[in-house]
Length: 147
Image (tube, rainbow, N blue to C red; front, top):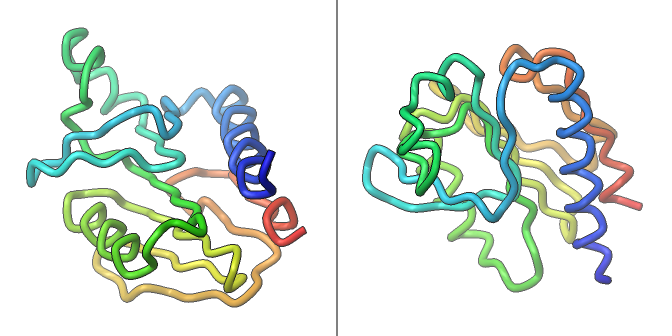
Protein backbone atom coordinates (compact mmCIF):
# COMPACT_ATOMS: atom_id res chain seq x y z
CA UNK A 1 0.00 0.00 0.00
CA UNK A 2 1.32 3.41 -0.92
CA UNK A 3 2.05 5.94 1.81
CA UNK A 4 -0.57 8.28 0.32
CA UNK A 5 -3.26 5.59 0.46
CA UNK A 6 -2.47 5.01 4.13
CA UNK A 7 -2.70 8.76 4.81
CA UNK A 8 -6.02 8.93 2.94
CA UNK A 9 -7.40 6.07 5.04
CA UNK A 10 -6.19 7.61 8.32
CA UNK A 11 -7.66 11.02 7.44
CA UNK A 12 -11.02 9.43 6.65
CA UNK A 13 -10.91 7.53 9.95
CA UNK A 14 -10.36 10.78 11.89
CA UNK A 15 -13.43 12.28 10.18
CA UNK A 16 -15.55 9.21 10.89
CA UNK A 17 -14.63 9.25 14.59
CA UNK A 18 -15.33 13.00 14.90
CA UNK A 19 -18.61 12.69 13.01
CA UNK A 20 -19.80 9.77 15.16
CA UNK A 21 -19.02 11.73 18.31
CA UNK A 22 -20.67 14.98 17.21
CA UNK A 23 -23.48 13.60 15.02
CA UNK A 24 -23.60 16.98 13.27
CA UNK A 25 -23.70 15.71 9.71
CA UNK A 26 -22.96 13.06 7.14
CA UNK A 27 -19.50 12.23 5.80
CA UNK A 28 -18.49 10.86 2.42
CA UNK A 29 -15.38 9.37 0.82
CA UNK A 30 -14.08 9.57 -2.74
CA UNK A 31 -16.64 7.05 -4.01
CA UNK A 32 -19.37 9.71 -3.68
CA UNK A 33 -20.02 12.06 -6.57
CA UNK A 34 -21.52 15.49 -6.00
CA UNK A 35 -23.41 17.30 -8.76
CA UNK A 36 -22.63 20.94 -8.06
CA UNK A 37 -25.07 23.77 -8.87
CA UNK A 38 -23.02 24.64 -11.99
CA UNK A 39 -23.52 21.08 -13.30
CA UNK A 40 -19.97 19.86 -12.58
CA UNK A 41 -19.54 16.40 -11.04
CA UNK A 42 -16.74 15.95 -8.49
CA UNK A 43 -15.67 13.34 -5.95
CA UNK A 44 -13.44 14.83 -3.22
CA UNK A 45 -11.36 12.50 -1.04
CA UNK A 46 -13.44 13.55 1.98
CA UNK A 47 -16.67 15.55 2.04
CA UNK A 48 -19.13 16.46 4.76
CA UNK A 49 -22.65 17.90 4.82
CA UNK A 50 -24.48 19.35 7.83
CA UNK A 51 -27.31 17.09 8.98
CA UNK A 52 -30.05 19.70 8.30
CA UNK A 53 -28.94 20.10 4.69
CA UNK A 54 -28.66 16.33 4.19
CA UNK A 55 -32.12 15.76 5.66
CA UNK A 56 -33.57 18.37 3.28
CA UNK A 57 -32.70 16.11 0.33
CA UNK A 58 -35.34 13.63 -0.79
CA UNK A 59 -34.60 9.91 -0.36
CA UNK A 60 -34.22 9.71 -4.15
CA UNK A 61 -31.68 12.56 -4.15
CA UNK A 62 -29.73 10.82 -1.38
CA UNK A 63 -29.43 7.66 -3.51
CA UNK A 64 -27.59 8.93 -6.61
CA UNK A 65 -25.26 11.74 -7.62
CA UNK A 66 -25.86 14.12 -4.76
CA UNK A 67 -27.36 17.40 -6.08
CA UNK A 68 -25.71 19.52 -3.41
CA UNK A 69 -22.41 21.21 -2.66
CA UNK A 70 -20.91 19.78 0.54
CA UNK A 71 -20.18 22.12 3.46
CA UNK A 72 -16.59 20.82 3.58
CA UNK A 73 -14.23 19.11 1.13
CA UNK A 74 -10.71 17.76 1.40
CA UNK A 75 -8.50 16.69 -1.48
CA UNK A 76 -5.13 15.03 -1.04
CA UNK A 77 -2.92 15.58 -4.09
CA UNK A 78 -1.52 12.35 -5.46
CA UNK A 79 1.56 12.14 -7.73
CA UNK A 80 -0.71 11.71 -10.79
CA UNK A 81 -2.80 14.85 -10.03
CA UNK A 82 -2.17 18.18 -11.71
CA UNK A 83 -1.75 20.88 -9.06
CA UNK A 84 -3.31 23.54 -11.30
CA UNK A 85 -6.35 21.37 -12.13
CA UNK A 86 -6.84 20.42 -8.49
CA UNK A 87 -6.62 24.06 -7.42
CA UNK A 88 -9.21 24.97 -10.07
CA UNK A 89 -11.48 22.20 -8.76
CA UNK A 90 -11.12 23.52 -5.20
CA UNK A 91 -12.05 27.02 -6.36
CA UNK A 92 -15.03 25.54 -8.21
CA UNK A 93 -16.20 23.92 -4.96
CA UNK A 94 -16.07 27.29 -3.18
CA UNK A 95 -17.77 29.07 -6.08
CA UNK A 96 -20.61 26.51 -5.80
CA UNK A 97 -21.22 26.92 -2.07
CA UNK A 98 -18.65 24.79 -0.24
CA UNK A 99 -17.81 26.71 2.94
CA UNK A 100 -14.37 25.23 3.74
CA UNK A 101 -11.92 23.28 1.60
CA UNK A 102 -8.50 21.83 2.34
CA UNK A 103 -6.09 20.97 -0.46
CA UNK A 104 -3.24 18.94 1.03
CA UNK A 105 -0.05 18.63 -1.00
CA UNK A 106 2.20 16.00 0.63
CA UNK A 107 5.04 16.45 -1.87
CA UNK A 108 5.35 20.19 -1.15
CA UNK A 109 4.34 19.75 2.50
CA UNK A 110 1.76 22.47 2.20
CA UNK A 111 -1.96 23.02 2.67
CA UNK A 112 -4.18 25.45 0.83
CA UNK A 113 -7.28 26.49 2.76
CA UNK A 114 -10.25 27.68 0.73
CA UNK A 115 -13.09 29.66 2.33
CA UNK A 116 -16.09 31.49 0.89
CA UNK A 117 -15.35 35.18 0.41
CA UNK A 118 -11.74 34.99 1.57
CA UNK A 119 -8.37 34.69 -0.17
CA UNK A 120 -6.74 31.27 -0.28
CA UNK A 121 -4.54 30.71 2.78
CA UNK A 122 -1.36 28.70 2.18
CA UNK A 123 0.33 26.97 5.13
CA UNK A 124 3.82 25.44 5.00
CA UNK A 125 4.14 22.17 6.94
CA UNK A 126 1.35 22.86 9.45
CA UNK A 127 1.16 20.39 12.34
CA UNK A 128 -2.63 20.40 12.41
CA UNK A 129 -5.71 21.90 10.79
CA UNK A 130 -8.80 23.17 12.56
CA UNK A 131 -12.29 22.56 11.23
CA UNK A 132 -13.12 26.08 12.39
CA UNK A 133 -16.85 26.78 12.73
CA UNK A 134 -17.72 24.45 9.83
CA UNK A 135 -16.45 21.29 11.59
CA UNK A 136 -16.63 22.38 15.24
CA UNK A 137 -14.07 20.67 17.42
CA UNK A 138 -12.40 18.80 14.55
CA UNK A 139 -8.60 18.88 14.46
CA UNK A 140 -6.64 16.99 11.80
CA UNK A 141 -3.14 16.00 12.91
CA UNK A 142 -1.00 16.27 9.79
CA UNK A 143 1.76 14.00 11.09
CA UNK A 144 -0.32 11.29 9.40
CA UNK A 145 0.72 12.87 6.10
CA UNK A 146 4.11 14.41 6.76
CA UNK A 147 5.35 11.23 8.48
